[in-house]
Amino acid sequence: MRFPKKLESIVDAVGRTPMLRLKSIERDAPGVELYCKLELLNPGGSVKDRPALQMIREGLESGQLEGGRTVIDATSGNTGVAYGMVGAALGIPVCLVMPENVTESRKKITAAYGVRIVYSTPMEGSDGAIQLVRKLVAEEPDRYFYPDQYTNEANPRAHYLGTGVEILEDVGDRITHFVSGLGTSGTVMGTGRRLKEHSTRIQVIGVEPAESLHGLEGLKHMATSIVPAIYHPAELDEVMGVSTEDGWDMTERLKREEGLFAGHSTGANVFAALQVAKRIGAGCVVTIACDRGDRYFKPRQWERHYEW
Image (cartoon, rainbow, N blue to C red; front, top):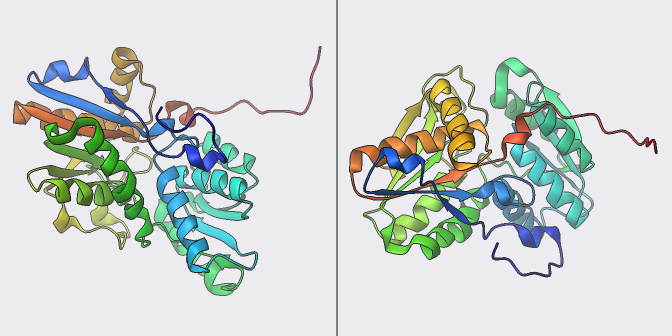
């Protein structure tokens, strides 16, 4: 890791994540380098640490987050954990709206930071959470600071200022393609802008579930979802659809062949990156390891009780 050995706050550990060359997976595409940026090594365990920190910082700088206001947002899990971590570190209260069917581990990890959780109906997914958080803010506008990760330009800006810069530092002009999933779309939009600024020859490819009903948690099927305002498909060279089965199968391959225990959105990213690598024949493809696989386990219940 490249952050300083002494940190003033846990938020100082966000970013500067390493890149892993997927040497086993890339054997399926001879002549192509395949890298995965390990965003799961952020202190909150996911790529969402970057935008959560950026949005809260900009809220503080603008004065919108003042007077004891509570940060509130809709999340399917990872951004919620990130908000909880940043809020705890900076002494800011956090309330989150998430679908009731997000994984138990995400619920418990988020709650462990002292976050207040409001659950939305599981059948409406992340869109239901968005609708509910808007209702809560409309009812008590003076109580909340609503960053709204789906419309806030600080979300992609976190990746423009961080992720994209770091990728260029690590692989430089060797990179030919960047592949990343579409949830809020902040990662692919912000990183893609920085990479395109470096060279318009770099291809930026979004990844979405192939079906509207899918098991790739954290990703959006854009045609059947509330489309984030920060999503600008014209800036992408391509959008690839990945099936739940292909994403899950690649997650298993990553564990067995690379020792990388990541979540299913990472599996979808790597599957899509490998398809790109196979068709180009030569080049350097970079993708994102979004979060850790243990976030999808049902956790043990911790108790304040010990036996010696």
